[in-house]
Amino acid sequence: MDIYLVPVGRNHYGLYCEVEDRRQAADDDQRPGWRATISRHFYRGLAYLEAERRARLERAAADRRTFARRVRDRALGWLAERVAEQRLLWFLRGERIATAHHPDDMPADDAERWVRSELRRDSRRHLFWMLVDAGVYVASLPLTPIPGPNFLSLYFSFRAIGHFLSWGGALNGLRRVSWAYTASGPLAELRRLPSLKPAEQTALARRVASQLKLRHLDRFIARMALAGP
Image 1 (tube, rainbow, N blue to C red):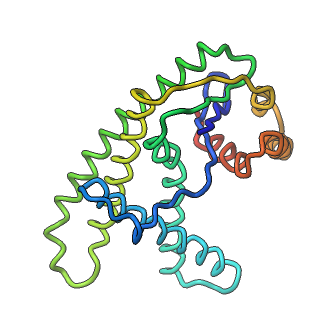
Image 2 (image 1 turned 120 degrees about the vertical axis):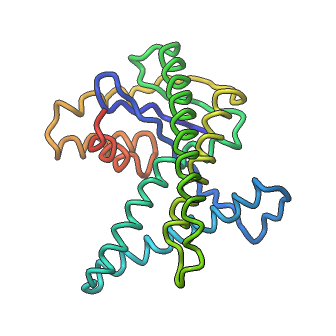
């Protein structure tokens, strides 16, 4: 697994990866155990989100949407963004070897310290929110008998499972993954982004993405820039 330390500020980085879509086929994965059951339901939810995302883009281009439809599409779009942010940790759950590509002006020891610090932070953060969302999910269960789908319960169960998988990925990265560190010249070029105009930032991000053969790096950089350090 290749992971990239993307500089998005003076001392701030984002962990980024691109892997082939590893959607677990829910109908084919019949492993026993509660973890496998959770994963099957969760990845079915992801498949639904992806289908809804594609349909949302088609609707936005093809017709005028009602207010209710726009609100629903915005909510699904926001959830799809949260999925994109956590996907790296989900994939890291099943890895044993990973290569971290870091800017070539950053010593490998510093890169290792930063990666481990980020994984520790992620493990604590996702454990906390997993417990919070699981608590809200349990509290919302009494609403289930009310006619119609219990969106509150569905939403917080989805969030709790996502944080559970992310927590497992962070722990696996800290405890079991064997890491290698490789310097990258193109990544170092991204340090110039804050000093550039928006159009120049986009052009640089796309050029670096092309050099590294990463299809969606420019979108990740734009999202990180909006989020701030």
